Amino acid sequence: MNVEDIIAHLPNLDKRERTLLQNALFELQCDFDLKEAIQENLADIKSGRVSSHQSVMDEIKNAI
View 1 (cartoon, helix red, strand yellow):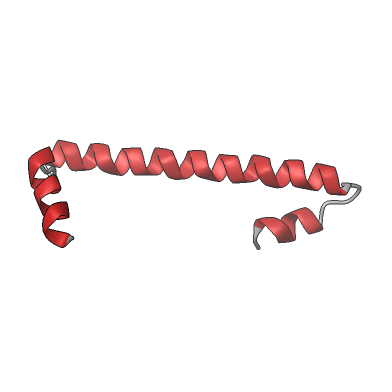
View 2: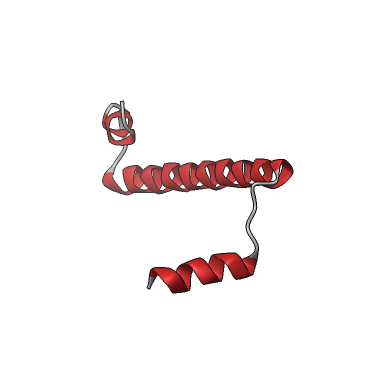
């Protein structure tokens, strides 16, 4: 069940309230995704899976 399905099943919400709820849920998902990405990157750093700035810039330049 997706967010729209959940909202559609909530009784007594007008269009404005549904929009506010959708926006709040979207922001929560973005926060969750950001925290998850940070945790993954911290794990990469701890395990040594990192690249120098220069090697990344060189790779970008070579891809163009």
